[in-house]
Image (tube, rainbow, N blue to C red; front, side):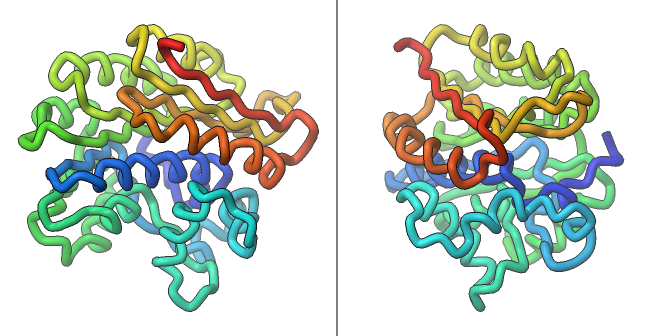
Length: 281
């Protein structure tokens, strides 16, 4: 919906899981000299201020990145992610949080390209401002990322990470995400696709992980982090998940190392837990 502003939620526990996975995927792709593309269907503003504005309304970053900021015992995958956040806060004070586009921009090399889509009329202006000096390496378009992505696949280098993470405030986003992924696989079956989803009590959200698993029998990874008990009133985000198609072989081991630590660090009660499943196992 056009009312959605990710700045309210920037840096929360769901962002920690999502961006830890995204950083790992980006760094894996960058290990080879061959170019790759980063495609984001719902890019948001690209980066967010935590010390003012929307982020101060709910202080959700205190449930996520703030709990990791001063820790010295981070597992390696989380240390990579936190280092990427530190790059936006060179004075050591946590004041800004990078969205997925900014994390990708940190990783991209001269031969790589970034394609960002955002429908929110205010967010797209901020996104363009944040990347005003990016040149032709980053093309930013206002509009429906679900539809626009079709024209990009397959990308010229035949290597890409595509992130699909709508707000899901509109319940139709669940069906649209499934349809988008199916269409993407037809056009570019070997691409890496990362799909984020919220853990909320809405029926569409409860069915979504099983629907994602049916997209393909193998070459997928599903990770979910619940930080506490399902709310009795049915309101609020109690966790999130990531579903990755064509994951690199390194991702499973990285998450095995990371998830128990995150449960302890971000969990709010004894119901905090994680799920890690790999298709084909």
